[in-house]
Amino acid sequence: MNGNTFGRLFRLTTFGESHGPGLGGVVDGCPAGLKLSDDDLQRALDERRPGRDGRGGAASTARREADRVRLLSGLFDGQSTGAPIAFYVENTDQRPGDYEALADIPRPGHADLGLLLKHGLSDHRGGGRASARETLCRVAGGAIAEKFLHARGIRIAACILEFAGIAAVPEDPFGARSRPWFCPDADSCLRWEEAARAAAREGDSLGGKVLVEIHGLPPGLGEPVFDKLDARLAYAFMGVGAVKGVEIGSGCAAAKMKGSEHNDPLVPAGPAGDARCLLPGGAPYAFASNHAGGILGGLSSGAPVLVTASVKPIASTAKTQRTLNLQGEMTELRIGGRHDISALPRIVPVLRAMAALCAADFLLLQRAARL
Image 1 (cartoon, rainbow, N blue to C red):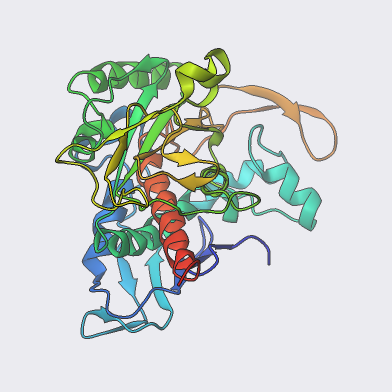
Image 2: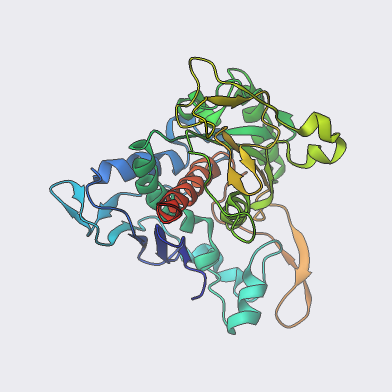
């Protein structure tokens, strides 16, 4: 109910608000025997925090939260027990007073108006549940899912593909995790930093694109009708507030291609081929290209799954805007407080987490698909 849970068998339920006492979540369905500690979740949360090691640079908010996570249940002797795994993060740097002037003015580009009309009230302190701060719960839950996937040889890479219209070369998506801005090449982040500083001087915000790759996913995950793997991934990514579009493989570019160009012919696998990609007769296979993004007919094909998310500019800007207040009067609005110049790069670990949660769920579902 109420859209606070993601997944069918590997399930994450989150709770808490941006300016409440704290946020947390419960992961249910994680099998017993998974080695897990606070540090596993903390490493992922540290990647989401603003300004860490210059990761977000000029794009990051001035809000400084430690985001220290505590595992509360579901573990014994450092291993999952099969019981629900609960975690909690305390809010320590909230400033609800920054939002008092907005109590009577729905912010353009935000969920304020929709929540008010839906429930008859709206938490104007940063949007409550609609705040981007809620995504820390997804990152923590996704860290558990990613640990589960790693034990099965499945790895996930995520990087910024484009920022402020400046495209990077995705030559090293896995290496992006250790670079500023989650940048997949050595040079683009310098131009991105300049663009972010220019937007900050103008009091504006910027958007971009994020690429997520899932490697080692066994073929056959997903269903061919209403529960396609690509449909679920799109659902998972579109559930992140700033995401406005999702593409699989070649995505929208496929509309300009011919069928003969878009098809990915099967070829014999080389020595480095995935041992799980075998034809019924036992011969290993690979693909000559990957326009389909690792998904055919809604099922994983064995090729890397490629998902690109388009992320809108942050709605909260320092520029003065003309809009209606709740009395229907035109008024001028200038949003104060501490806000990101862009959801990138802090959204990168969030999307990686959603991919992990989705993949873990499908792996558990696959166990019941055949004898």
